[in-house]
Image (cartoon, rainbow over all chains, first blue to last red):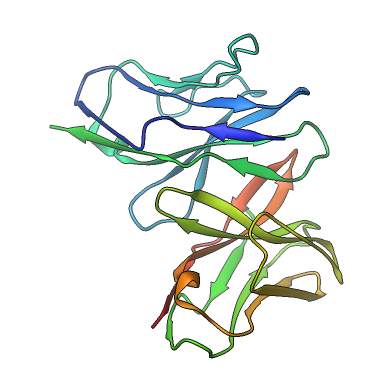
Length: 110
Length: 111
């Protein structure tokens, strides 16, 4: 079964501090992992996906198959990073369905 | 960019009444999805469609039905709304390589 776990419901850090949002997954095959972000009362937007290996808004995420993790990191948090973050998993190419974690609400304090 | 709209954006209804939410896309993407978003649960898949008249159940399909008579429209119906169906509903389309693009959401309150 596919499962995504985000252990932190809430995360609060100060502006300029490093941020790490944790995501662990359970899947027996080769997964595709995504991070989506939802700013206050807006639609979900794709932040990044592991196959593109790019950095968006200063965020990066590395897929660690040994630890089955896909943690989201940013070295210096900004106030505009305050949002809800969701980790999602797809069961490989052609799967066409996403399984989402419970989400982590990130608050950046000034 | 993919265009996707949802209607209505907000709705308040009473227990036992039928409710239909509409999702409309402006492009011919094959896959469409309905999710509900609830605190502590994240997004959960209700139903999805892989073509006209082709639909399948998701994780939380009980109490919901869907229809897709045209490529661009995907309807979600609550036959008899209950308070447990108070939620924010998101429609999404699969635009490429399992990447999904989301609609603006519909906030539904069942009294």
